[in-house]
Image (tube, rainbow, N blue to C red; front, side, top):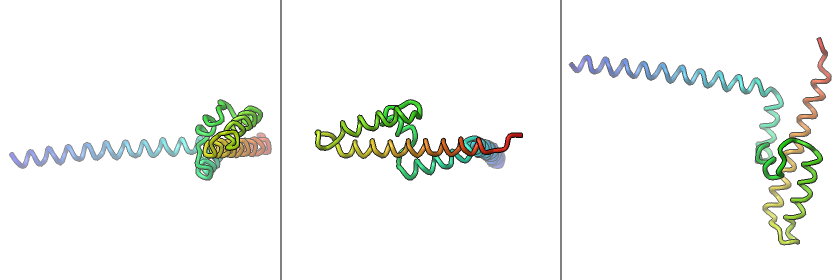
Length: 125
């Protein structure tokens, strides 16, 4: 009886172990595919997020922009920077967050412009 119970437990552990290993392999493959899809710009964007401490989405939320339009970014940045100026009763912390968000979006615009230039320079076959 104990022998059969031990065999059942061992078989169950093997089944669960194989399923876990297969799920881990699938997740790793999906992660690699997503990273390849993002390409080089994804790596640069991630590096910019690490340097500024803000993700692209956070920066867009802070400056209240939905798309990367230089004019809209600049307009919202100037307004929020003035409103949060300490001399008019604003918060230095919020003003610094606005500035960091503006820096992050400027970096993203620079990365996009660089990618566009590289795409234009590629020979067309």
